[in-house]
Length: 214
Image (cartoon, rainbow, N blue to C red; front, side):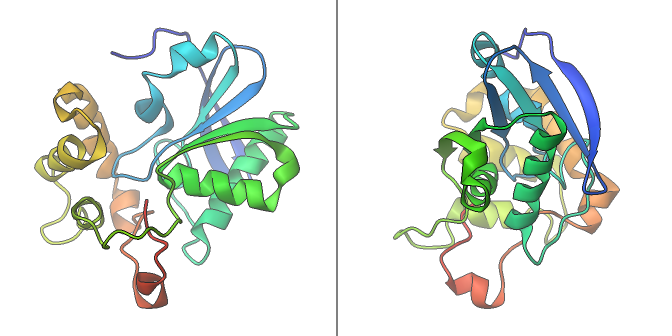
């Protein structure tokens, strides 16, 4: 199943970086921020949600820096700060004063950071398993090991990505169509991404901070 709503596609420059986004619907602005798994992008992450939301809202679905059709450069010294600044810059370009944010995992961490940095720009905040929040469970989980290990070892492969998606990423792995895995795999092996993966295994102090759930 995928979105049947007509999406318009756009590219803008924010802070010197190319940001791609798709848009549908009219009304209050809702920005959908995708997760950080290999090959992720805005529309592939939220394709099953866009129709329902676009019936009531102006839905903006960006590819965050490092992913999809947006610029692959990401400031690894402050990744969530950079992501929040990029999303804030995007809504500035679009002339939006206040937007509701829906953030999944990595995108949830970016949404949280934007809400902290500029609370007056955020209406409602809807988070799904947001990154950047420590928990009491043992870390790293098997899912995180699979995620962070994707570019390690023998390097990325479709089999590794399929195992991650079907086993850890969604509730019903069998419901994920093969073409979506193919799409994400091709995105994950973009040479610029392989050379500089946006999501990396934490090391040093970060490893013990309890803040690397993505």
